[in-house]
Image (cartoon, rainbow, N blue to C red; front, side, top):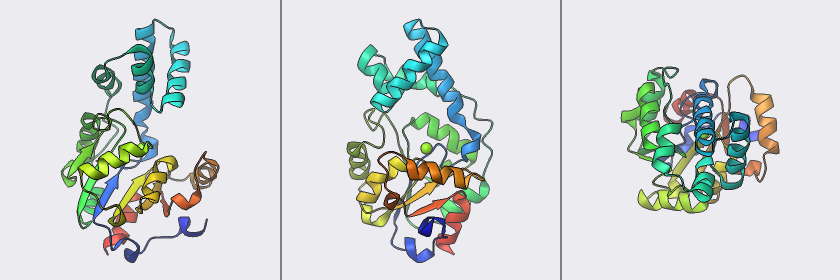
Length: 236
Ligand SMILES: [Mg+2]
């Protein structure tokens, strides 16, 4: 596993002034699986919109996700759906599985510089999740799929929008993500990249990461299953 299994040292991140975090499965653990609820809502939306049974709707939903990067992009292209309506329905979920994470909040707060959430979801979803975790006040801003004009990560143009809007010097920035493909652009831009993996599943997940399409292991500087512990090591 070389460097991916090793702990970071504070020196590795001493130059970092902007800290960029994905939301889902990054700021809260993978096993919480809020996406399962969002996924069900999206399937229900497609089923209702196109009068399909749920099984049929799910197949189409996954095809749009695969072909367009998000279900929404496919629905906008092929069916002219109103993105605000879709996003509100998709994110109408129960956040009670997210509990306040004081240690994570403290670790984020202790980082020097600005902190951002950069999500393929919505601001409302990010705020609800971060508020449930008790960490919302630690972030300077949230960049979402609406700000991205519905072009999700890993689209290069979306990273450009985020970086220029916030005047991020990518040579002095770090990105935390659970999807390897979303770290390709950040690495190419000179950011430090950290991949979040599920707890207790390291071997399985790292194997799938190594096999991930279009993903070079070199895009990932560090791998961790413990965001709080990782951040704490950077400021001590
Ligand atoms: Mg994620």
